[in-house]
Length: 256
Image 1 (spheres, one colour):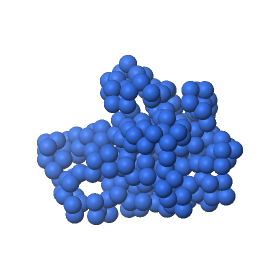
Image 2 (tube, rainbow, N blue to C red; image 1 turned 90 degrees about the vertical axis):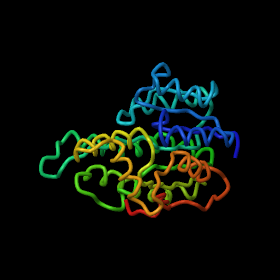
Image 3 (spheres, rainbow, N blue to C red; image 1 turned 180 degrees about the horizontal axis):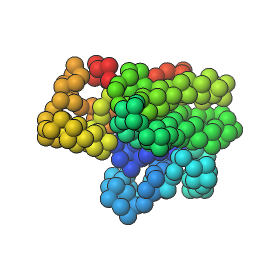
Image 4 (spheres, rainbow, N blue to C red; image 1 turned 45 degrees about the vertical axis):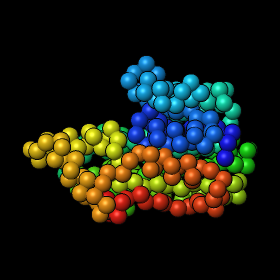
């Protein structure tokens, strides 16, 4: 399991940071790409404190081919050829269909779905050359179950699931596996922002909105980022090389 080079997108917070930590613990060399890409901001400092000096942190905009190429090249220069990729970047914005802004739709599709495609396309040749690849794409239960005011998010995450299956089939002859992982609500900065919006929309407090999310699954708890990170590390290991072409839901028993 040791000695591989891993790239984690959106890796300064939440699921990405937990995945980076789990991969590092497994002995891999980890590069984190983030739109902020700044070790001097709060998230960068926290990531550095948690992961230490061995992690590489760089600026990455998954909507820009040049940024993707630049980050991947810098990772190669720093560590070598990446053969592990975790796409954990993502955004969402609530909007009803009748007044959905074009920019909100296209931004979510471009970051959540097209960004995964760009990263895989950039790293696939190296994985083929190394005859080894492990790809884990973070999707969502929203990719399986629709919800009002989440059209773009649901569409983008459903696309990630379909794209992951195509990647798995194309990568299979080259010892490249690909899975999508679809969590329910996870205790991340994204969930915290959603909690604030839900509270404002319903005229209640952030604490009440959090409790409502907590009660929304049969386990009556909020899933933690480390649970996803540990699963990512397993999927990216050599422990189960036939685990591919699959979407794994981590939902605490909930549909959403």
